[in-house]
Image (cartoon, rainbow, N blue to C red; front, side, top):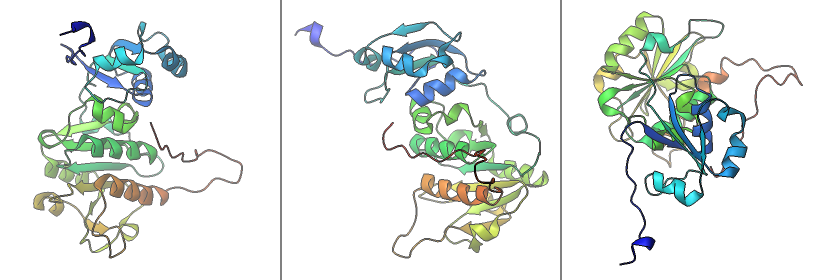
Length: 271
């Protein structure tokens, strides 16, 4: 056998985890809570990242194949990989800012375990101003390169809070004045009618089993997204994006023409 041409297998690092992809790496470098160990980039990716690299970590340059060997097979790294420590754990009180202006919006995910779905939800949470995404520790994906890549940087922007008991957290949120909305296909009213101007918690369950009974019972209302009868349901990350937009737009007063204080949504086909 020609050992020189034998591909090397990915070996997980002894400490920390690899984040990859330009958006995930850029956000991690910009996050002061993130401890960075190594940055391995192609020359082109280093130019694209630019300022976030300054002062954070010594840069190692490598080609795409060498970076790929650091990561699990199939990782779409775009020439950028970062070895770092997981983010420090946060409790819900630390994660959410105090009330100011418009009400706060948090997401509560009940047993959504796919890292691609949760990453996409984090991305939408960042886009629509959510204060935190709350998950149950035993039934949610841990921090990983896959989750961070799907989140496109949002993992380092929106607090990802892991708790022991979702029902108990909903009780706590209710005691603090949050209006708790369960998103369910058999809800009694549309999401538009269920929203409020105050603090809100949007609660989503897994695509297979939906919300657990005790979790749904801790909500103030169950609401649905109107869709055509020919389609039974939406992917949970798509439903989250639509729901977040609906709840967010109720708080948004359009700026006068030319003000430009809100960014225009850009849709990326390939990342």
